[in-house]
Length: 281
Image (cartoon, rainbow, N blue to C red):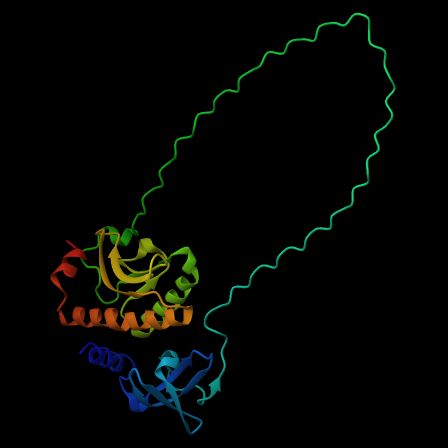
């Protein structure tokens, strides 16, 4: 039953009019195919007509699929710059040459006759260092919402409201942050339901993506709002083995939880708990 629902949602989002769609399909091999969408079987394959020839792309090789606006260039196969930017490691500094130290020959010291009477050495009093008081930490100011949100009344998840993408992963999975952010921004632009903003204080609510490396590893997708202070977990999954698998998982979680939330809001079938947690009266 769950697989049927996911398939239906993918068909609604990607195949609104499959016979007249020109799409752009990216693969894990780094290729992009642009052409007419001939056939799409969710979780099986996609067939795109490129240069008059059918190109079959297995589902497990797909990275993304986007609609191409009408009036664009003829369908061609191109090889784009890889989606995930490789982080160049800084070159290790070359070891500095060790200078050979010349053997130091002590200078001859002339013998000095000791004085008959020697004066006593002065006594230097030991001064204890003064203790320095520990500075009191200054608390950071709490974030403030944008002026237009101070008087906002209504449901924070309404169509057209602003959302901040909050991707925070374990430091060991830092590269997963940017990958998740790229996928979520792409999906939001495609749907056009909410507006993504870079300033969290301008957002009506957050979409949170977190990945933990502890234990077996867990990815969590949730929504929250700093206006109401509420958070709701939408779903979770096991941390994938690499960044490419992580991109695919974020795409699947978005289609499984975010798109159904759009439909519930449009039809007025929002769960009572969600309505209460994200409504400002």
